[in-house]
Length: 152
Image (cartoon, rainbow, N blue to C red; front, side):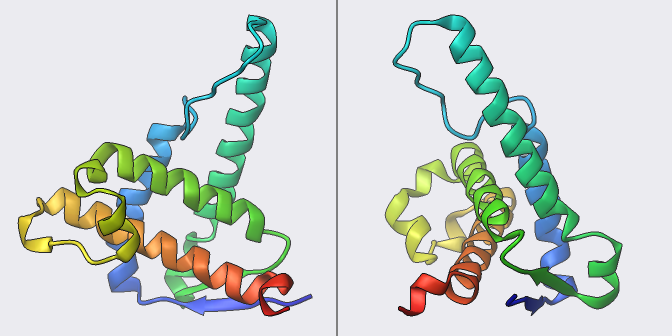
């Protein structure tokens, strides 16, 4: 089983984790994306929403666990096929929250290019943008190194 250990700069990542945790806390009671159920059955819709929310919170919990005491000792984040899909989903959910809460005025082109006009941003937006880019980079690493279909 392939395993990737990513060594991160603690001084650079620690402030981003505060922003990420705040976004994760925002997501505990709600989905990152609005649920649109075509079936008018409210009981079905509520059940589906509840299951999706549990899954989202579980994924985010797994992701945040990567940044526990061992991370602050070694600076290493272990990634492997057993946690990669959940981490990809958690990163996506947190990125969507950061976008909606702090980065929406920048637009998709700026966010996806990673080249934002930092001078025109507030401190809060700069931190949210840095966290957004960090999460995107982590997603790219996972896809490149843990998805065997990428190299086919």
